[in-house]
Length: 223
Length: 173
View 1: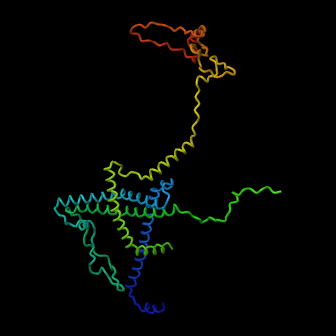
View 2 (view 1 turned 180 degrees about the vertical axis):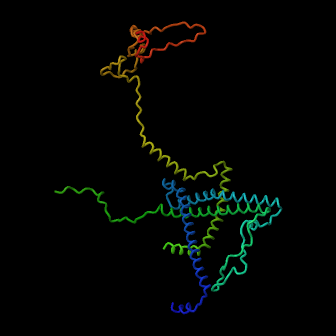
View 3 (view 1 turned 90 degrees about the vertical axis):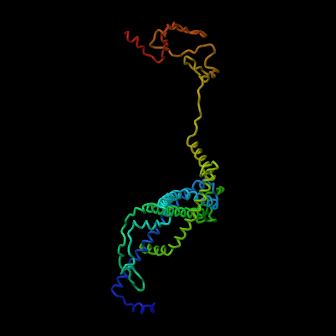
């Protein structure tokens, strides 16, 4: 530690460097806290989604139809697959709608090579990230110095209207399907966990040498 | 403290994020394969005349067990009352309302050939009360009348034993 102190003491920072460093640290802390909150939210959501596995396996477990962890896992996997199919039908139908629109539009315009995702960019702001003075260098790191200038405002091109609908359908379907897959993973984890917990036996508070005196026969009468 | 915990978790999740994304993408591909397999199973069920997704045998078994339990609980909660039917043969009373001391139940309530006699006496109708007592085996005379053509037959209303107040005689007074 003592070896590094002279090195740190020799670093000279200008006022701008100090400000940039403080801003960088604050941004990083806020960013990581936000990522942590996001991760916690995803975790809570997965716990909630995993509860569906209990509903799937409740009846067969309490009636002792399923009696071993292996049976539990096999039946749970079958039910989880069937539920995944049912839940992913809707996003696939939405994606199919987008595909049909794309086929019809391409047939009508006789253009099968158009990048529909680039057309969809018409609806958003575009920034010029290569403008002068946007980036700066601090300790050898390239950092954003100022907000980039606007290069495009949102606008609608009539020839791209079909692309807007297609991409919207595809994005909604993709997001929806990822949520469905997340729920599938949550249920799979829950089934794995329950297959271990439900059939486990615990000796935690059991003492083999403890004798329950209430079950002993009464003593013979004394003289 | 919570802030620091979140900060630490944020660093952990940021480091694990690429791996989590890869895992999610792999599960998404697996989900597509599962979708296709289940779709084929569904089509096979459809063309074999079954339900698209028939319940699993384990579910059916569990359902039967739960149904039996429910019926048992229902039977325990509502015990069936023994049915008590009173037949004419069990009538221990004579037609006049006097119980026969020590009499065994008659095999039939009314002897063959004898008309059952009513035990009530009309209070407010002196004409009915002055009727001669009927003999056993004698059919009481029925009022006869001739029906005219195009005349709506009128049924004689039998005297109600519960008409204890003679309104006609009350009016005459």
